[in-house]
Length: 319
Image 1 (tube, rainbow, N blue to C red):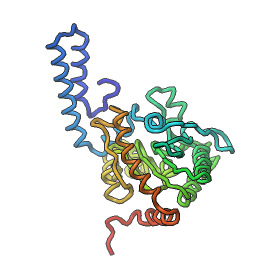
Image 2: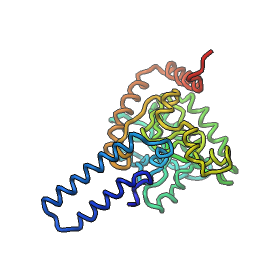
Image 3: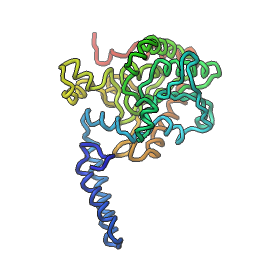
Image 4: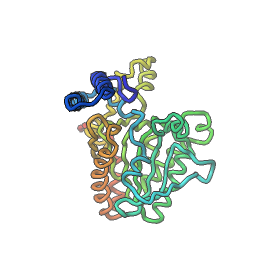
């Protein structure tokens, strides 16, 4: 299969190979018409496949190596982005991006995990999106700066988890995430959280306390990755497909539980197939959420944020 094609997209891969073979031949109107017909057939098959994705298939889409990153969205939706580096205590964590920018000409702070692009060198440079304590401390340092200057915070979540290595434990990863949870709960500026890829465990939560949580259609958000869940519950990580079903990690599941506020549609085939269109869809949802939250009086906004998180876990519970 083509390298960008996921395992469940095999019918599409076969047609893509046909198009590639035809494209290498001398072009005629008849041959171009055949290519166009195959392209339309691919779109039809892709739309049908993506209407019926299983939870595990959604995991694969959320992890696609070409899925847009926080910096892709910054380049498409924001202007005047100025990155801020370092936690002023240990070092700069490249798996966490922070910086001031303008959104619709309004000054904001952008915070987000970064897994790296499709290039392996970039993924290693970004530590595959696994942030360390200094990443969460950098995020909090810049969010406090945003609070000081009255700038809204827009957080992009896309991480498998916080980095689980010895150095993370030595430098206090649990304390760093816990402090972020506490401080974000009372941060006196609008905070919009966007889960656009993989929202994994405490690593995601470390920048995910806000007034509104938006989630991309094929993103995932869970307490643990399916492989880890399967290894703990059944001592068999190969039962990851079963675990993905049990975790209820899809956007429709989480909207039903009241854990997110809105699902952001994606282009057919996922955001990686058309980043520009994906950004436009995200833009519409973000504009509405930010406008709604910014219109609230400070005290009312903080109380609503508190009550929002207090209510989590009560969906479906009756007296």
